[in-house]
Amino acid sequence: MGGTFDPVHHGHLVAASEVQARFNLDEVVFVPTGQPWQKGEREVSPAEDRYLMTVIATASNPRFSVSRVDIDRSGPTYTVDTLQDLRAKRPDAELFFITGADALAQILSWRDAEKLFGLAHFIGVTRPGYTLDDHHLPDGSVSLVEVPAMAISSTACRDRVALGEPVWYLVPDGVVQYIQKRNLYADRTIGCQSE
Ligand code: ATP
Ligand code: MG
Image (cartoon, rainbow, N blue to C red; front, side, top):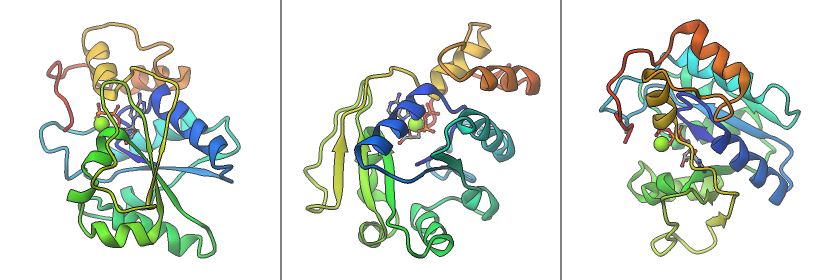
């Protein structure tokens, strides 16, 4: 499951858990992006902070892990590179790429879109406020999964922190504490969306 995870929140975790159970996956690997090429509008928190928050959030689930492939590769993150790197580390694994409805909508604009479908099976999860539309996707390459609706976004979490509002229970407790400890999102432009 790729994402900026700035910060990781319970929407991400519920989606990952639901797909893990539905497809009986051995492992869900969270892959925080490097410098996100589609997020030019705002400054993204340091990769190491996003990585550590993701580790904290996933630590208690034996089926969840976090990969550094994207943050250790220089330059912008392309999903084709992510999948090739994960494939190299797990040559025998069957790969599934979990992504949200909003990201899935952009999938055909991604670099090497056709190649992507050969590298992994794509799973699009529902997300409140976004509709899933599989009209333009190649047959059989994408599954759509309905997950319990969690109207949480990282943007909303960042805005709440900037306004001094609580993010308890929107993100895992350890992530709340990490945000405080590192003083993340304290002074930012409110409502600055990533895409
Ligand atoms: P931002 O507001 O900064 O864009 P985000 O909440 O969209 O952050 P991302 O890191 O961009 O989080 O998301 C990673 C993936 O998780 C995306 O594919 C996104 O669609 C999906 N996702 C994010 N929030 C939810 C949610 N509440 N329910 C289902 N999927 C989600
Ligand atoms: Mg997003």
